Amino acid sequence: MKAGFTLALALLGTCVLSGCVNAHLYPVQGPLAAQTPPPIYAARLVGAFNSGKVSATLANGEVFAGPWKAVSVKERAAQSAAGAAPAFSLSAAWDTVYGPGFYTAHVLGTRLFAQAVLTGSHGTALQVEMYRQEHPGDASAAPIDIKGVAKDDKGNIYKLAF
Image (cartoon, rainbow, N blue to C red; front, side, top):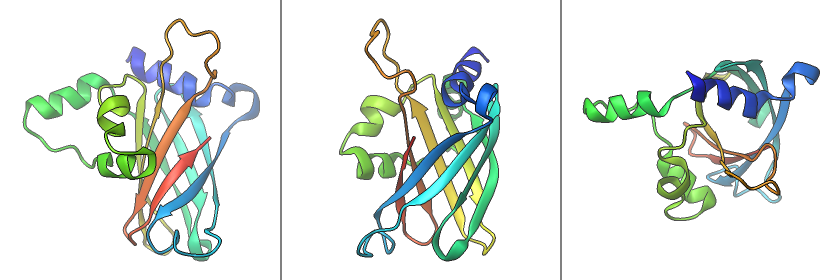
């Protein structure tokens, strides 16, 4: 529960005052990334504690909205120990966006991790994962250092930047 609370504070620390955190989705692979120039889409996260809502408007004005949820290391480890496949994993998308081995080196096992599964107004499915990098003892580190990826069922992979 503490990890979920910490993630929520990291992701949504500014929400107490402003109500939301703005982000952008940049297509890096797939049909949208092939456009010149590639489009940039706006996203917004709101919430508190270990869950909230995310919304975005993507190609052709398709609107996505739904919940995001912090997923603890214990929950992910329990699934793995039980031999249960996670609902989804964007490990390949992380490596596509940030480079080979990124998921294993930085995301896997992190305490500050969240997921969302959204359905757009035109029926497109969008999966989102995000995590906050931890910088123990590094006062010069960015206060909110969040990275994320998303993947839709149209073959697009996005970088989620805050």
